[in-house]
Length: 147
Ligand SMILES: Nc1nc2c([nH]c(=O)n2[C@H]2C[C@H](O)[C@@H](COP(=O)(O)OP(=O)(O)OP(=O)(O)O)O2)c(=O)[nH]1
Image 1 (spheres, rainbow, N blue to C red):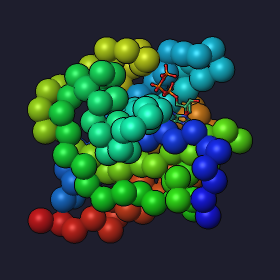
Image 2 (image 1 turned 45 degrees about the vertical axis):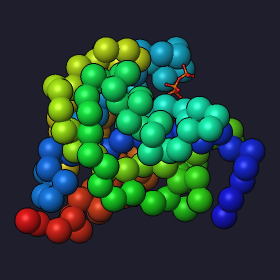
Image 3 (image 1 turned 135 degrees about the vertical axis):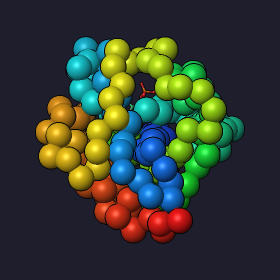
Image 4 (image 1 turned 120 degrees about the vertical axis):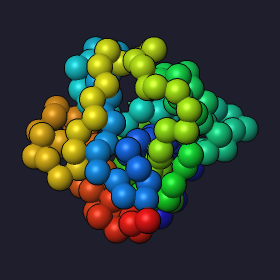
């Protein structure tokens, strides 16, 4: 299914190890008010002329100060990924940190590594649209090839 009216957002499921993911880095938003205090996948809107992958690298450098390696995409039900709201959808990739230590430089006030097999993960107050993505990330992590 494709809908060109949807704003394209990209998000990163940052895991400790792409070969054998055990923990996910969740990020708590500071803005806008409607989302402040909610947890999300770091990322943001794709700019005109930019590929989704390039946007994800840019957003992660801006927001967290890291360079990353992209793993496989956690595909959603739309060509544009996962529906977020009537105006936007998000493509999500498994990601591993290549350089830098993630810090909440902008848009977030807390970052937290949470084990993928822990109940704490789904208990965080995620942006509601992200909950099915969290489940899909857990499934994708289970299927990642162990090295
Ligand atoms: N980054 C991100 N955005 C999400 C998630 N879930 C969700 O509903 N959204 C929504 C919130 C926003 O409406 C939109 C992304 O906007 P954003 O504020 O992160 O984008 P951006 O960094 O490019 O910000 P800006 O240019 O508008 O300032 O998608 C998520 O897990 N991560």
